[in-house]
Amino acid sequence: MTTIKTRIADAVDALAGDLEALSHRIHAHPELGYQEVQASGWLADFLDAQGFAVERGVGGVATAFRATFDAGAGPTIAILCEYDALPGIGHACGHNVIAAAGAGAGAALAALKDGLPAGRIHVIGTPAEEGGGGKVKLIEGGLFRHVDAAMMVHGFDRNVLHQTLLGVTRVAFEFAGKAAHASVDPWAGVNALDACIQTFNAVAMLRQQMRPDCRVHGIITDGGVVENVIPERAAATFSVRAPRIDGMWNLYERVVACAEGAAQATGTTLEVRPIDVVYEPMHSNEVLLELFGANLQALGVAIDPPMADRTASSDIGNVSQVVPTIHPWIAIAPRGTAIHTRDFLHAAVGPTARAGLLAGAKAMALTTLDLLSNPDLVAKAKAAHQPQ
Ligand SMILES: [Zn+2]
Ligand SMILES: [Zn+2]
Image (cartoon, rainbow, N blue to C red; front, side, top):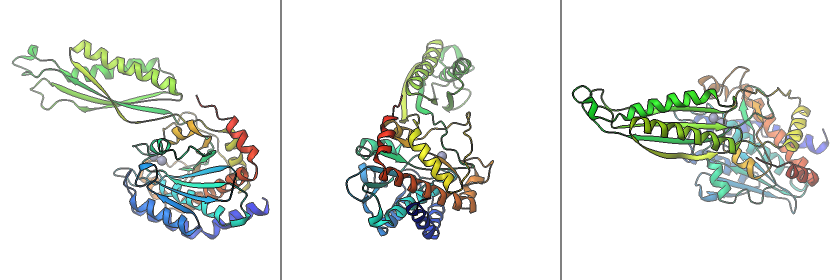
């Protein structure tokens, strides 16, 4: 590595204790999406102390922040921090590590002071990834308007540069029928639960014709009150996921058609309501990924192959549709530990998490340095940005 790169890696190591403490503090105080008052405050305070100009509550989101280190006219690079926890199981997605890695990357670059090439670094605090789509609000709030490239890392049980993140849209179906005594006058009723069940059966048939990289999954949220009354109301929610936006809406229309057909078949009326914001598919940027991968390898971290069939969704996908973006996965848990589990929760404060935090912070800082020192790379990344 060059001298300046070694200095950046050393700066992360010098902050290792502080960064791990920050990660552990966030882990010990899990806060749900849009309620991350403590986590966003601790991160903002840390970056403020490292010489960043910090704006809190940006984009109209109280628990979002933007910390800026301005080194003159040049590219603008955004490093993103997530810090929301999961209901019931806390930081089982390891967002405490994402947060500390992002703050550490920013701090290491700021430590170069006058030695930093011209440009602007934003560390952006993005709330509510596990539902609520914080990044979508920040895009709407203009936080990515002048950003040339964005990056974050996510914890995993291995180091993977790119995993497919599917677009996802969520929908609620509510069926209205007519109550009747289920034994005395069943013929007088209109069974809303039947419509729900018929929807699931139709979706199950549709699944056979779905592409293998798409997902549809649902639950019944209201299946009636008592079995001696024909249910007059029943409801279900579904998630529809696909690797492309057009494919996602196409599949969504077919799932809605399943519910419409079920309503027709049962004589119920159907109300279709969208739930939550749409998470768009991840459009990864090869130019940025290559830089990040080379930096990770220069740090002595071995890169694992992607896993084709393990796909999730994230609002980083929405960011990737508007600016060149990467979302590499960094080992913070022993191999075989699945995210959103108790094991991953415990691993997120273990020794692998410390190593992953530092490697992620260094690789993001080094990649940002590459982009600031060579604006041609930014132009290349932008040319490669062709989301579908
Ligand atoms: Zn998660
Ligand atoms: Zn996550």
